[in-house]
Image 1 (tube, one colour):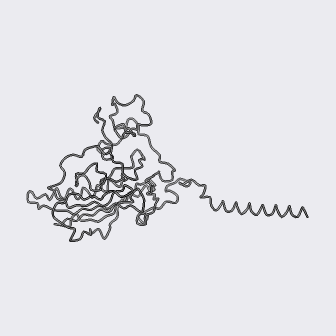
Image 2 (cartoon, one colour):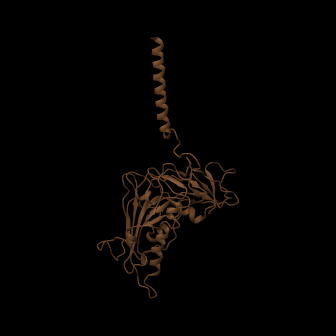
Image 3 (spheres, one colour):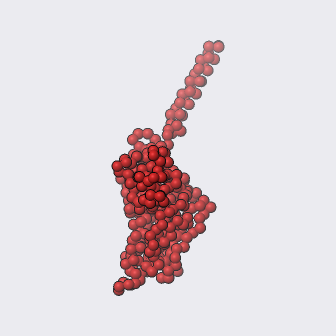
Length: 320
């Protein structure tokens, strides 16, 4: 009788163990690293493509060859109402920061007579929500992006006009493409030399989903009251080829990697030295640099203009 009970116990324990092992095998994701395995061309479990932005997925991976950063909204036609349209220069209207310190919509009516003529001051001290700076392939990911570009608004280090955005979101066919289109049109039609004075309605709406600290993107609209040559309505996606981004926090990492991979810039290709603590950049031979660069310093091959655009300040001693 005792042997029979022992056999039953052994059979019961073996059955429980088998069931437990099958359960664990089916739930291996509980123990897998967040970036998955394999060559990792895309983040495991992360959404991809334009639909990921339309659906406000929290974690999105952008393929390395996916370089189109915007899509058209409403057939590329702006939606300013007749009540909103005005040919009077209004200046820039900015929303107050919300409870999470995030920026809101910004808009204005502009013309060439009020465009800024001074060069941008290099200093940008504001750290917008979702700011998690990392470097990929020698390039810094995050830029401090103006909602209304300086070339239109004249605003520089204004917290209500700055958001965290990737390099591709800011430059190339990102925001700067549309900002320059508007600014250059107004400069051309400035009311002099036979050209009429054109007035442009311009509006920006950051797209924050729920309580996310980093915007998925931004809506950009322009409506020229005298012509339709530069009218547009687009959504610029806040993403970077080859990078996975968590929009809840702004955390980011290389596709398929758990943490970002920072490539070293060879000394013979470096243009400046960056102090990552103070956000100050120096000439390579600056007397204020330590004899041996420590972890607070990085070599960069960025141009001066790009560093300033990304919020870095030139050293007051070597004046790069």
